[in-house]
Length: 120
Image (cartoon, one colour):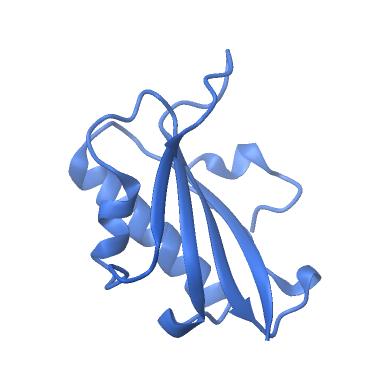
């Protein structure tokens, strides 16, 4: 098995703890399904969020997917003028049999605009 990094992002409708949980859970679930990942394949997950998201940590939602024993880290996204608001980005590090070209990076909830070249 090889180590792969899988990118994704989602845009929240509003800064709300429930919205954060629903959006991040949906994003991670889609990444896992589209890339045939199971919990034992995971190495770590790194989240960033835009500075307008203050209601909760994205990692709190990941723990609801029984990922509490996977290393999770959150950080702030660089506040670039004109950037998309209320965005959570994720980079999942995992063991996978998939080649780089077979990896499916997932952008949803309005975040497709960030990477039209690789958004599903």
